[in-house]
Amino acid sequence: MKDFRGTGVAMVTPFKVSGEVDFPALEALTNHLIDGGVDYLVVQGTTGESATLTQSEKQEVLDCVVDVNEGRLPLVFGHGGNDTRALIHGFEKIDLKGVDAILSASPYYNKPTQNGIIAHYKALADASPLPLILYNVPGRTASNMSSSTTLELANHSNIIAMKEASGDLDQVGAIIKRKPSKFLVLSGDDPLVVPHMSLGGDGIISVIANAFPEEFSAISKACFIGDYNKARKYHYLLIDFVYLLFAEGNPGGIKAALEILGVTEAHVRLPLAPISNELYKKMEKTIEQIKGAKVE
Image 1 (cartoon, rainbow, N blue to C red):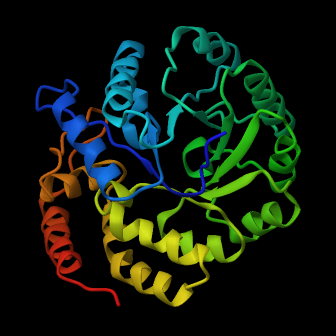
Image 2: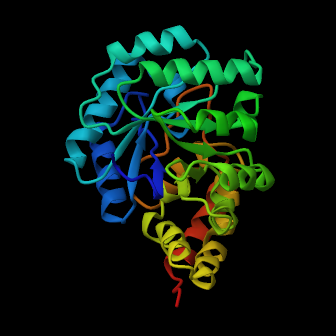
């Protein structure tokens, strides 16, 4: 089984001004991330605007990243929703060659009970041809996965990790304290990676690492060797930029950053909209400051 500790990247999906997927830009982004030293790639999560891509587009995006990656890094594919049966049938429609795990967000909108969430994930894990990574993101789903729910699911043989984006460090600590040793707890919140890992967490699936893969990966690398002084230095180097990224929503902010850096263009699909000119200018200034900084 591949190792999903360290820094994974929730990849954006680049678009042309026409709204079509920009595959040359996707190739450039993939190489940018690999060359930047991240530990694995996550394709078609929330940051990838998966909600606005057709099934065929999702497959084309996945195939592109698989081809460019050439097995260099582990690869995770996002496959989530609020219809359990449809997700199970969906496994039969996706060519998962080159993929190492599935990331699946907790069901949104229909607000299942904790028992419903447990049953949902057990059904998915039983059907999935690949190991499953849970994803708790109550800010988007309107439903939190409790620590007891996560811990029950952590004992399933085909569930290997949790992306925890509740922002609740007490909940994170409760999971880490009682989890099976093989089960990984990954942060889903860029600003919280240092405290998350100080509690014994295993890394992060990051948004900001799209723009600054080397600098952000340095945080988890430092935490793993216990160098929290260095981790804090990178945290404070990047934290103002992190807040700008999410000021007007994700992935509008990170796409603007990638445009400023010359990696991809900033186009998003409706109902998302581009960030404001005011925020764009603030990001330009902050990016220049980061590029000119040195961390000892």
